[in-house]
Image (spheres, rainbow, N blue to C red):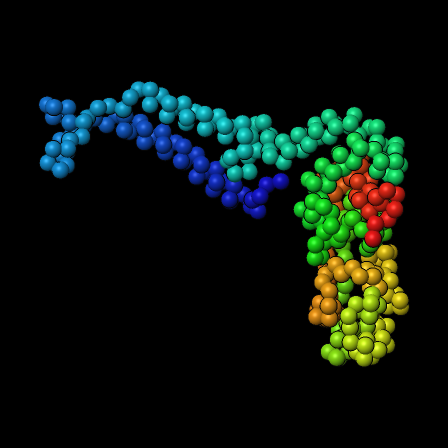
Length: 305
């Protein structure tokens, strides 16, 4: 698809390019033909600093030849490859096309490597050293940028090495998350909760659910206001994986801990997004990667806390 919104810019770029090339060629011809009357000592007659003179030697033939070859090469390149506005070149080459062909070839070359894993259940694959080595490389190339090389995440990026899952931690849910991505959105809830004092009271009630330090009086006042939050997080605050609503009764704080952090989220809401990977990875790669991620929170067959 052309980046030009109308034909003017395509013609403009093509014209500027061709004018530049032919202008250089014309300049070369003019310089080659122009003769300067030389003095008897083969100089142009120009003198600087009393004794510095300019010799009247012609340009070397090899230099002129290389210049002409460069112009011819440039014109040939523009005929074969993109460069003249919206003209794609006779070879119809593009960076996107070259990238897609290289990726298709790489995936085809890797198919035999992944073939042995396609029929293996996630639990078995997580015990296979070769599968886990491949999964680790996939994780480092595609996931570690956000979740960290140890998969323990950081603020606003979930820890994948514990047993706390926003959308469920089954192998199928992990594959679904990797394939389609996730969009987490909590709307601003201050208006539904009430006054600024009500928001602070609710924040302390939320802290009390996990046994975190809190103001007991404010927490008792905030319990009745928590009903505005219960639609997603549940009356017990244990969350809802179907909605991606986090468990508020554990001691895991994805977006920050403390009264101020909770008040900020209640007032302003929160939006988080994980991009889908299905256009980047094959189904077999996603299966191996999901097994690796699942295995991070199931060391020795037990769920990690």
